[in-house]
Amino acid sequence: MSKRVLCKFFAHGACLKGEHCEFSHDWKASPNNICTFYLKGACAFGSRCRYEHVKASRAQSFGSSSSTNSQPSLVIDSASLVLPARTLASGVSLAPLSLSELSASSSPFLPPSKPAWNGSLDGDYDDDEGSVGETRNTRPEDRAICSFAAAGNCPRGEKCPHIHGDICPSCGKHCLHPYRHLEREEHMKICEEKRKQLEALKCSQEIECSVCLERVLSKPTVAERKFGILSECDHPFCISCIRNWRSSSPTSGMDVNSALRACPICRKLSYFVIPSVIWYKSKEEKQEIVDSYKARLRSIDCKHFDFGNGNCPFGTSCFYKHAYRDGRLEEVALRHIGNEDGQTVIATNIRLSDFLADLHIR
Amino acid sequence: MVDFARVQKELQECSRDIERSGIKVIPKNEATLARLIGTIPGPVGTPYEGGTFQIDIALPDAYPFEPPKMQFTTKVWHPNISSQSGAICLDILKDQWSPALTLKTALLSVQALLSAPQPDDPQDAVVAQQYLKDYQTFVGTARYWTETFAKKSSLGIGEKVQKLVEMGFPEAQARSTLEAVGGDENLALEKLCSG
Image 1: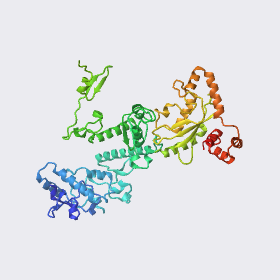
Image 2: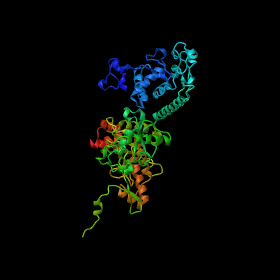
Image 3: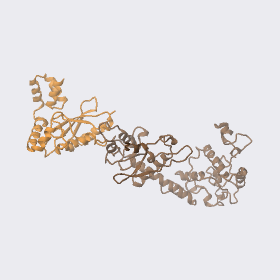
Image 4: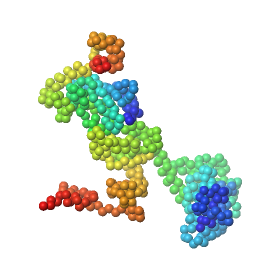
């Protein structure tokens, strides 16, 4: 169905995808020039927008024309196909747009059911020059907030025809839409997270590695500017130092399990090291870093397991994915054996020869 | 390769704190930081009190992931230090080393070893025997060795040079060698004899 829409890049004679392009390279195909921001009721370019600010009827006809292929997910498809192109085309000039506008655009343009043109809107309500009168007809939540104010400073101040958003407590900018509550919450959540991350990064700057005695985040190469978090204690090291220590060959009689696996400072044994660009302040933050790291590794196929062809020395404790080529995950039934001293141990690799070794044949 | 950036930092840190700890670490010569000389004062309340002990430090290539090699150059009478070679028997200089330890903390541990001998895990069996069987004699010997080898001689540099000249060394050479080793006449004599 996407073949119906003329490729923007092809139209400019510069589509790199050639025959593999998902858009049409046929001049007869109709170009899609509908402004998706306008459809959402929030185009910051107003009358200067190079895309068409069309009304509901045409947009719907565009929607229905593409749904002739009778696929239920079509509307969303066309939206997601059109949107990236739109952002691409106007990528640079979009910069002053506020976060809220961007987040509005990234949600799929589903329904022309709650459109900006609901009322008897004739001209571009979003016109730059004093179209305030017309905006009276739109619902307040459909009106865009001033993107200059949202970016930090509106040169028109009080005289600005657009709504100025409320001040976000985290970023201190006028970027909270007074009427779109979902968007407000979204923005505040993101903003709060960003602020926390920045703060954590600030604190992390000061932290020194006790092995190289340097600030971890001031190391010369980017690869070195990472912390190595030990699973069992809270002493900071840079990832290269702690990995070096744990992998150093025990030449001078150092025991791998008691000395090298231990924290250089408190000598508590840790069984793994987690790389992280920021240092944590609470147990929860540490857990979060550990969990996200493990989740990331779980999506990567284990090279030792090799889709079932190999043998992973870490077995079920491996952080990487153990899946066969058909996508089936490895199933391991652990066999618990009662030890001589009464403790339960997990049996690995039981071989018949292990039992035969003790057998005395007369 | 030795992490010289870290060694440099350690030396700075050590010289900043010299008033309080009394522990001094200086490079043996200008050419490299891999060979150093550490100096520790004898702990108060022990037979080593009043002495200043010199320790030869050699950093292995893998430092700080391998322990520094330390050896007394000043003769010491102690169960865990060889009276012949100056070799030190201390776990953190062997299998209990940790890269979070520094030259200063290692020297502090050596200083602590002076005040808390472990005769059950001896380096020098003769000294350990004496420590266990005849503690009074041990204390006497240790004090005598401290007086003889670890006390800075009260002689001025001129008298030291004079002494070396009397032994048959040319004066200019004796003076420069003395200055090179920091005024220690025993070290100067050793150096003059060896080359």
